[in-house]
Length: 493
Image (tube, rainbow, N blue to C red; front, side, top):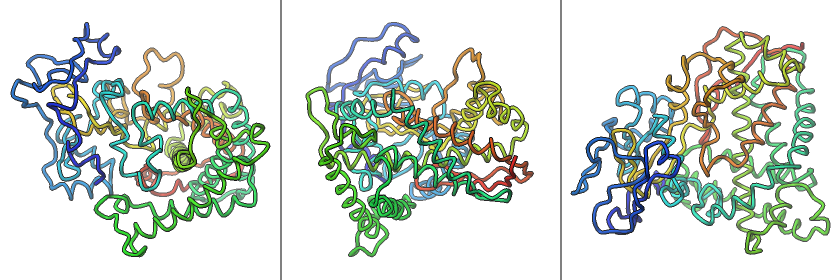
């Protein structure tokens, strides 16, 4: 397992971590916030959430911890890696919407499917939780400066530099770019046939994210894409990146082969960065890399080459896989829910300004989120429902379980895009892109890509009904994908 599951070695509940009051959003719901407490050698009695009833953390430090599966940690880890959705479903059915998962040698992991508890964790302030520690598994690939691994001031610094690249005038350029690439790829499809549409969406997503990040293709682009795909192929198994398996063995082990490919990709990245820095037309370019090279923080300091490389790798990896998987699930959901076809085609043809199309996408991401969990490492005691999790524990917030909660979504097993059509009285917990200050920076781009690509596809082709069972939820690297690669029967409209 990654370093985030090794326990509290770098944290101490007694002398290195302070417990703080609930964030304002929590305090407003629960009454006046208690005063902020300074570090103390005494056991802490406040943290994320509010105590209800008897103290959840008593004077001798005992806590009310959730129950969970009793299997050995190694066996639970295998189940989690092989079938992440089935693992949380079985755990919640047996032990409730908050249960302990023995993932790693300490077993200090709580899977949280209760929406109220997830809201508390997402509302927590940076000094109360960390995300970077919990994402340590990705460090060998994305690098230590990746937005996924940064916390605190450094995370905010990088996020503030990155955000303008995905806002404002850039979106009109993104719209035109996605439409052009989608039209080109979709026009090459046959008149009819059964196709694994995941392959189509992967081609579109890779072309889009590379052009968004690097600008129009040049002579270096094919080699760069090939090297990137080689790295992605070798990082498919989470076991390759777990610390226990990070042995090079002269470059012959899975990890060693990955590191060789990654070094080759890094050389190409650094060539791209160096040539861009020397480009006399840098200020006129519209791609994200050029914008990042020109950008500075509030102190006038720009990003170093290694920081640029890490953010480039992060955005390329996350930007193409999540979009391709989201599109694949959308057509799989349409294939299995043909009652949506007529209103969806009417929306695509412009009847409602794409309102139903957008609702369809939201419902698809609700039922089939492409990322199953959001992970946070607790720096303070978290009072979640009847439980109290000490500092050093991992809060594994389950998007899958939250999106299936009947209190948030009545009849959650039914595919009903109408639940997202206006007027929506109260927005339920919808978190396919995460939440809080760690919400995916490319969320708006991903939604735009799904709208444009689905409209381009459905304006030309019908997804024919299929009485097969819904596709099995599979895992590729760390995202959830249709096990049948979104195989659909299509025909020209």
